[in-house]
Image (cartoon, rainbow, N blue to C red; front, side, top):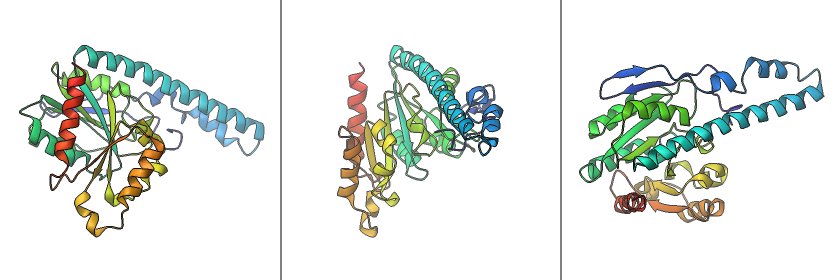
Length: 277
């Protein structure tokens, strides 16, 4: 969790409205006050080698603080979920390793569906607005959330971003999380579903190496399948691994660059949109 993932206790999210280029630095990451990397926590670890019993206290303190962080996040996520439901908005949390193709999938989806569905996007990254610029060029309202040293989005960031983005009733909201297969699995944003994108270039064993992420997801998109002839990737083994950690996981094979499998992805999106009506 965040005790080991690299989140900084002074991380502050910056929200950029790509339509107005307006910046909002007001959101202080929740970890600033309660993060297990606090000075008190550091002090405990500084003395671990002097007192073994004290190390147990440090571990207990860490777990307690982590539970508090997740509990607060979950409360805010439920508020977000209620807001989404009240506004008839389908919110999907896209998660993956860096470079799996989340942004490319979004670009293609926006270009193909923007005349049929109102789509809005929140882009999460530690730095730069590069991905948000790509989404903006595709013709979609987009907000960039830069997490600084933070390795995931949280419910408070989404709540702040919603006030700025103001998605229309009935919209499809894509939240592209920070590239990371660990912490984003633990932080509920209030979304309807998590969608995990896995590139065939990453290796077929990722579902069992990062089981929490694949267990938390409703759908796995296997991307870059056009590269299979050139890779030593066992497609069936990957699907078997994924279903071993989540027997209910839906799997769609796609190539964003070639367009194969995208109709199945679009059908799934439309099914989810109809279910919430």
